[in-house]
Each structure stands twice: as C-alpha cells, then as structure tokens.
Image (spheres, rainbow, N blue to C red):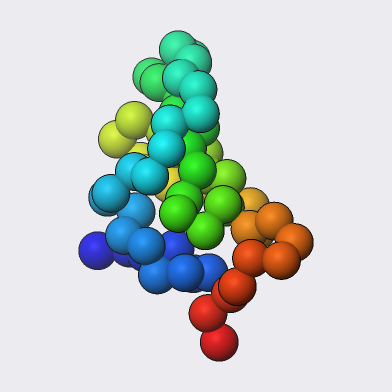
Length: 61
C-alpha cells in the first residue's frame, strides 16, 4: 500500500476530491491529502503526481 511521503496518509483513503475530468486515458481526479498535498490520480494508475503541502504544514521527519 502506498502512502503520502509527507504525512503517511494512505493513498487508498481519499481525503478530499477537488475535481474530476474525463480524458482520453480515462478519468483524471485531482485530490487533496489530509496534509494538504495536491494529488493527480488517473483511473487504474493511482497517484501519478503530487505536490508538497502548503507552507506551515508539519512534514514527517
């Protein structure tokens, strides 16, 4: 199981869905992790990229 490298939240447990978009590859879903990190998920591929949490958010050491 993969987890967020910043806070350890499981990728399989979506914290917040920001938006969904149909694409030729399937569906792209923008989500936000519990720590605030923005993630891009592609149906069938999981998290394909993620941003860092915002300033002032605690990060795992």
